[in-house]
Structures are given as C-alpha cells and as structure tokens.
Amino acid sequence: MCKNRLLTLFVVICNLVLGLASAGKAPNIVFILADDLGWHDVGFHGSEIKTPNIDKLAYDGVILNNYYVQPICTPTRGAIMSGKYPIHTGLQHYVIAGSQPYGMPLSVTTLPQHLKALGYNTHMVGKWHLGMFKEDYLPENRGFESHFGYYMGHGDYFDHHSTDGYVGYDLHFNGETAWNYSEVYSTEFYTRHAENIIKSHNKSKPLFLYLAHQAVHAGNGNDPIQAPQKYIERFPYIKNVPRRMFAGVVSALDDSVGAVYQALQDANMADNTIIVFSTDNGGPTDHYDQNAACNWPLKGNKNTLWEGGVRGVGFVHSPLIHSPGRIVNGMIHVVDWLPTLLQAAKGEGLKYQDQGENELDLDGIGMWAEIAGSSGNNAWPRQEVLLNIDPVSKFGGIIVGDHKLVYGNVPVSGWYPPPDGTTDDMEEKVDYTSSAQNTLFFRPEGKSLYSGPISIECGLMPLNATKECQPQEFPCLFNLKEDPCEYHNLASVLPELVVTLQDRLSKYALTMVPPGNKPQDPKGNPQLHGGVWKPWM
Image (cartoon, rainbow, N blue to C red; front, side, top):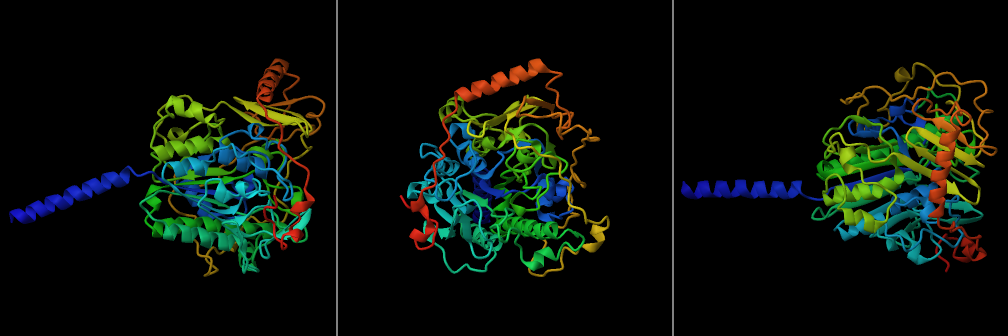
C-alpha cells in the first residue's frame, strides 16, 4: 500500500515537472509569407475570394489592422531577416534581378541566425530573393539548416523556370538543383515539404519554419496567372476570368495554410507554436504583371507608397496569446518581426534587456507583449514608420502618428475596385467541400469573436482626388485615421506639419547607406551554368 502511494506520488511529481518544463519551452515559430497578396484578397477583409483557413486563424488570433510592409519583394524580405529598414541594408531600390551580383549584406545577422543561437532548428521553404550570386548569400549560409525553394523573384508554378532578362531553371534543395518537379504545382509541393519538416521535427528543440510561398505572385509573362482547375472551379460566381483564375491561386494558398496548421496539430506542436501570416507588399492591381490582385478600397498597388502598396495583410495566431480574437490598430512594421519573435523565443516580457536591443542596432521594435495581450495599458510602442527613401527613383514617404507624407516620383495611381462580374449570391453558389483532394481544414462558421469582415470606411471619393495630389511637384499629406483611402491632400492646409515630416525624413536620410544595386552580369546567364539559376562568382 505504501509503495503504491509512493509510486503514485512519484508519477504525479514527474508529470508536474514535465508540465512545467513543457510550459517553459521556447515556442515553435512558423512564419508564412504570401507574395503579392492584396488587401482585398482575403475573406476577413471582405473579399469575394473565400479564404476560410486563413480567416479562421486570423479571427481566432490577432489581426494586425495597421500593419505596414515595404512596397515590393526584396526590401520586405530583407526587413524580415534583418529587423532593419532597407535604407540601412542597401535594399531600398527595387528588387534583385537574377544576374545582379549583390544581396543582403553578409554583415547582417539574420533572424534564423539569432534563433539558431537560441537553440532552434531553422528551415526555409520557398522564395529567397535576397541574393544568390555567391554561395555565401544563399539561405543555407544565412542561418537556415535547410532550404527547399527558389532564389529569384518569380517563375512558372509548373515548370519552375524563371524569366528575368535570361531564362533558367530555379528550384533548389540546400544549394543543389532540385530536378524531377516538372508539372508539379509549386504551392502544393512547398506545402508538402513544410508538412514533412513539421512531421519529422525533433521536439526536444524548438522549430523555426519560414514558409515563403510563390503564391500569389504572377508567373512568367507568357502565363501570368496559374492554378490547377480544381481550385479555379471553386469560384463559379466570379465572372471575370483573370480574377477567377487568381482566386484559384489564392485558394491553393489558403489550403496550404490549413494543411500546415493541421500538420502542427497532428505533431502535437500547435499548442506551443506562434504562426505569423504576412504579405510581402500590396497586390499588383491595374494589370501590373498581368495579375488580378485587389487592394480595394485602398489607393494604389504594389511598388508604390500609397496605402495599397504598403498597408499589408497580416495576423498572428497562437495559443500563447493571452487574449485572442482581437483586432490590433496599433502601428506595426515588418521590421518589428525580428525583435518581436526574439522576445517570444526568449520568454521575455515587455522589452528586451536594455543592452540587448541597443547591441542589435535594429529599426524594429519588440512587440510580443502587445500582440500577446500582456502589456497592460502602456502606450503603443511604435508611433512612426519610415515607408522608404529611394535615392535612385527619388521618392520617399513616412508616417508619424496619424499623418502620412509622400514625395517625389511616386508612381501615379488610382483606386481599383474588384473587377465587374461578381454576384451577390456567392454564398449559395460556392461549395467549399466539392473537392475531396482539397479538404477544408476550418469551417468558415467556426467560433470566433468576429464573425464579419473588417472593413475600411472611406466615404465618397472627391472628383478631384487624383489631381489634388501631385507628389512630383510638392509633397502630399494625409490624415490616415480620418482618410485611410488618401482622398484629401492636406499639404496646403497644414504646411508646418509638412515641414516637420520632411525634417524627420531628412534625419533618416543622414543614416542611409548607398543602394547595393549592381548592373546585370552576363556571367550570371543560366545558359552558362547548365540552364540553372545558381551562384556564378
């Protein structure tokens, strides 16, 4: 009897210790980056494109309603990896072409390098786009233990060739060319690879998985919108053909998000995992790249500093969030992910230890406590965002408080609603479970604090909205709190504020490093390297 009691007590104590140890484990981190996903391309923003898996994770997590990214691919990816504004890494001008011999500086300590030092296993799946001219710049040499994916900015979803001045095959596994994937849809095999990483992960160490999807970027120019018919068939109510095809690309991405979450559940990892979902920039609307994204009702598109180019889709989902089911309206920028995720990984509270944040020399601000809902009623830590300063194209922009200033050769842009041809009775026409091979992981009616889409109210557009802002001639000023669609230029009404924000931009410019862009090198032509995009120096 006594022995049984002692044995029972021993088991109870062991379980308690194991439970405490589990509770103190560093969280797994899964960062899912969509490519070119527009503001109006997800269901929780009211899109006609249904994204039930994305929506369920967003509604049950924390939706970032005032989240900013860079206007185009390379700068955003550099900001995620470095925690620094592109003006401080030389990535502030456009993107890296395949044969350009430069990349994110090797002096940058990347997010996976930081996490690896904390004991994480680090894996990457998908798009890199931060330099590949030398092996030192490849993902597996920048902190990732493995990389399965591609180096370029875009490519064909089926044959995996990229056309970027030259033409070459662009699919790799740990630096070696990954053949035998012809005619396999990239969204699907990236998902399978991510699932396998989760399934085979040794749970004695925390996992960092960076899943940088090709979706929903356009393919090559000869075939820009690519999705298997089984996804496109989910949207019979979208009559506009390019938009319906684009919806198929988005739906495959949505399935992937659900499948990755299901893999975490199956591996008993979901209860200690932080999922970050983000786009890299606004959607390419108005026939940009011949794609069919939508940022409505925001102004502008990809590669502009208008809200449609830089206000991003984003959310965080995790059981570690103390008060889930929230919409966060505090300002967050893509550079904030590195310090925020390091805070979560270290199990720290409101801030880094003072010395740590200063030593890292970051532009990002750690916000894990604010996102997790454990910060109390402290003032929101970020009150301004540098949108960019591009000394080559000669434009820039900044947000301070509620006000935004843009100047210079910002591409002229308008407001682009969803294409004509959608119906009002789409709920009755779509069958979410029509394809047995594309299981819906979360029902759209799943229990969440919010049941409807999150809308942006802009009011009526003035007839002179486009004409009254000409940033090439004079900076434009907007109050984003009152005018998120940038209808009303306040520069002439608040000239002193224009000067104040210009001065703030000038201070940033003093810290800027020169753009790292280099001319294309003919030696980078894939035809000189077996038809493959790969390092050549």
